[in-house]
Image (cartoon, rainbow over all chains, first blue to last red; front, side, top):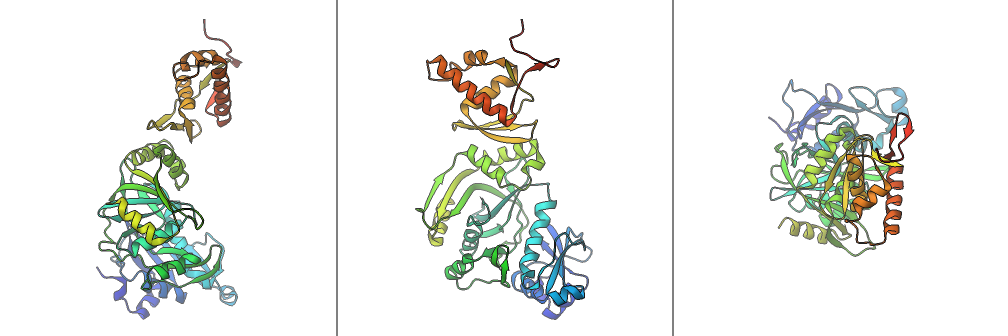
Length: 301
Length: 101
């Protein structure tokens, strides 16, 4: 099977604009279609080491970011497509790349219920999976990016996919979304970071995605057992600390951060109980990435 | 008045002073104190009056002050009613206000 990087840019552009490019991403096949230049550039930069799905593969998510009508071209707008339908309003074409990534997240957030899904970054070190739930702005993506640049494996920046009744985490490795000051913070942390197109003035401010599949076995689709749940919180004004959380309080907070805990009903409770009873839970308050990464290293011994 | 839990739910209790309770009737999950969780457990088995709860919970609390215990139970019952976890026991459309003979 070949990697995206093996496709010349001209071939990638042509395939995106016609039938689409099929990529293996975690357990899924995404078909991506686009006639917007930034999409091809972003994919070539951030998904270079992703595998092209074999011809005839079942496509789980068919997504696109296209400018098709004259009105869209005149107004500089583009449209996110899912199964060639338009679930959202058009967006400025300068923000197309960020919207493609958000749309790819949305596919999993909305349509996948075979897992207990938490809104969380997931990383792994020495075979131990760490779930880091958090609201947007909590600092989970920034920490996830710093860990990815420090030799950790990034399983996901957005979704913890837990098979109910187990502690198994299914990897869904994709680029890490960085926003506003986090972009400079990560560039300062590692000047070698590979970033995709910058999308300015989005509803989240300026957004750029980071190539996150640097660790060996980044695209291994085998599950990784969860060992810890860490709730990160960036705070410039508080002392940095790492401390144990009660499991019961962690249960409720993790449920709050779940995309489908309520949808799963009693099965969701059972799945969360199974998970929380088998992982240690911590709060991590940080403002210095080197300190936070060192603390995470301590946690996995 | 007798109180009851409409559908017995599930508890996640790690002896941490707080207990996670899943209410299957609403699908909601609540974080309860040990004391509130014990009231829910008591009312999951059978409808009980506040007085019966006082008797059941006396051993669990340090307080020797019966009035204090009564007040604590009333407060927690009020909160559990607000959450929809606990209801007045009703039989044939009538509030059941005493223990069965």
